[in-house]
Length: 76
Image (cartoon, rainbow, N blue to C red):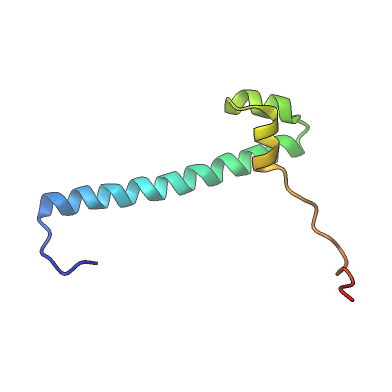
């Protein structure tokens, strides 16, 4: 943090910025979690995209999770 003195009013505004940033991160995580849950429950990408207000391709790109490989690939 810069060493200059910060007034009480400015400190309140900066704290509000921090709170908004935390809320944004939490909201993005909630959207991700609910999309994953909806897809697992049977919603298709077109339905999810409709409720997000994006295209199907955008929803799929943003939220589609690649399956985790169960075996390590051979590198050599």
